[in-house]
Length: 312
Image (cartoon, rainbow, N blue to C red; front, top):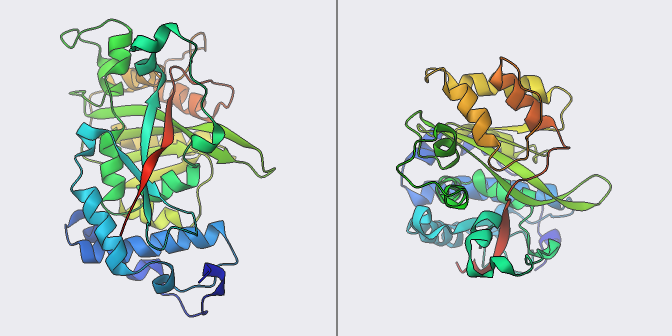
């Protein structure tokens, strides 16, 4: 059955199912119920013609099995990510798909570095929406946020682990200052229908509080982000700089003052901010960088589609 042929019925609001305990406890049945609301609401934003009920789109049992697979994966070690499978032909049985990071820094360190850099095809890049929707899912979002850190830049610049570099440690999420910062690149289709890779900037405290700055996200994801301890800000919004700076201040509140400058420097490891002016207010500088669409990636980390979808 095609999803736009399903029976219309009243859909209970996401607020009924989403509460912070769902993201904190290990009850996969409750998590699957909350995840399905996020999953189905996201699909309906992608395709306004979908009329199928949540149960017709994906059953709780299938989603629970997929979540169990994610929960059992040590993503911090395997570096495997999981994203929403928005392909209507396969999502009924395979709600999640794997993804992996292709890191330009890692490639430069490899034996193939003397060869021409491989071309990344648009069709291979995970979409902005599929990645953000996954961040909003219980278990999946937390597991993905464990998988995105690396030491490739340290190796590229020739530093060993004994050398102290507070900004680099933040970029690796290994800082004693309690902050991590990195940038991934995903596929985004703008209002004109043009596709391009765009950055997703991620700032994460040691206690799990997270700021994500990227393009506009589906509106119905905002509630789930909030419950998961994630704040998402659309970098193209008219008041984005003010919102970002305010959230950055909240993020570093209670941490050592020097983290502010190091956080801006850490951003520069994956984004080309060399030569840009600096002021006495590093968080204001960082907020300005985050809304500046002229800043290009530096040794980019591209999120690419994996080779398999999770059978459920």
